[in-house]
Image (cartoon, rainbow, N blue to C red; front, side, top):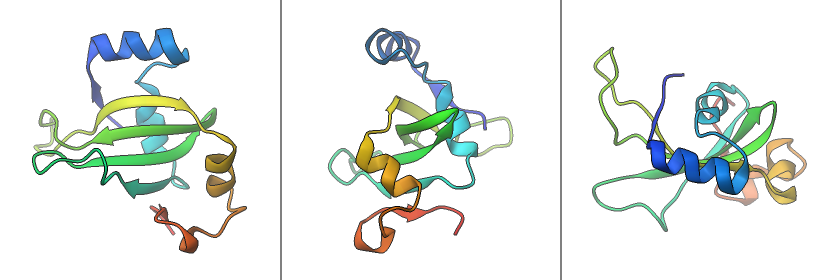
Length: 109
């Protein structure tokens, strides 16, 4: 999936987590990914989403859809951060924990 990101945030993410923000596009391509609305960090002007998906390894990503328009006239996801998923996030992704007990949902059930 085509995504955008801030080049300085990309470099900061690489320095801190050794992962480029471009991996967010692969996470969004994962048909088994799970998501939840990030109420804590969303604003009236910008909704943020947290996503756990596979891009070689299970990753946790934050993105918003409030970004430049793509070539098809739609909003392009804007990647804010990408990191390795922690143990609990991996359990959620792999279905070892019931998503119905959380605010996470499978994007393609």
